[in-house]
Length: 272
Ligand code: PAF
Image (tube, rainbow, N blue to C red; front, side, top):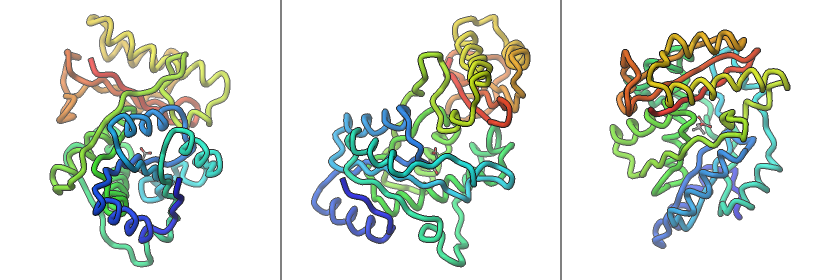
């Protein structure tokens, strides 16, 4: 497995691989890898990618002031070992200084799908995501890129960016991987104390209920989260593709939750 830190070196390698007809898959991550990330690597493998590049980069420009950029968990050594074991052929570990050169002044901004949900609560977040993903596409030259659907809005925003800007990259979105308890896997789960992990289960339990029980309303879902001790950021039901709000949960729509468990902001969703 190759390890790159210099964007130019990875790009040169990727361009040469493409010229030799190699199919490249990119799995973009912020590291502190868990089973959810590794499922994306395995999905890339199942799609017969010849090269699987995992990028590990805690992208400073997608964090808002006061968020957890500084304390976001990092473990480079363990991540490299996990990538190797999962079948990645290259890992990209750039630094903020090499990704954002002095005077960096170009931003990629999706304006519609990123307006609501997390985009409304985390101003600038999706500009940061689109900018780094566009850069990663140019650097790693992937034929396909695999994203997890826990970040449902992110996956749709990236799809739209790819369509609007004609990136020659197929976007693959893989299902959420959950712990046996139901908790959606996330690097941020590491912030949760033992009691908080129990409190957080109200999110996946509520989403399971709304999928199974058509009479369970969004308001009831919100109340169940509050009763469990979560501070709800939003509970919304949207069209699964346009992300426009729909009044009543219906088949094919997506219900999304963002809620604070203590100081940790968790997100989860379910497609009905
Ligand atoms: O989902 C993430 O971990 C990040 O938002 C991504 C896609 C790697 C961009 O920094």
